[in-house]
Length: 188
Image (cartoon, rainbow, N blue to C red; front, side, top):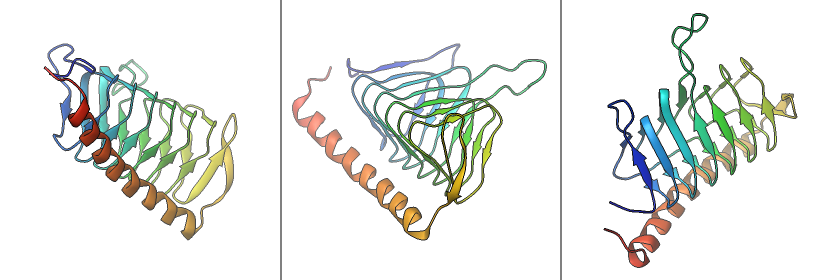
């Protein structure tokens, strides 16, 4: 077991991490968390599935310093707010992702906050530094930004192509980091 990671079962549920996923040193992954094939969780992220579940799909990346959590069921929200992240999602550095759904190919910029009940549809983007307040929905191919976030414009085909390149870049970069760590990092 690597000492530079914390992977902790909580209330009898252990994180389930695909063996092809890259989990960087310094990460803390707790409880009911599922991480898909070729996903990458970058340095010093915290993913806490202690009061509900967190799912991160294949080839999605969660960049350095991001915090992902969920919310408990309550009388008004009997299912609570799990955090469900689809496939090929890009999440920028230092994001705060809480009790929301990000569909396949969604993009969340660096230093953003996404709150309970929010939905970011496929091929939609939340701009860097934005605050998406509870219950908001970003439709497919829309760019939202600001604090609080609001619709800015439709995304172009070129912007969507750049997002796809970003996914491929992070899958390859994760492999390179995994190799570098295997070559140089002591492991137990």
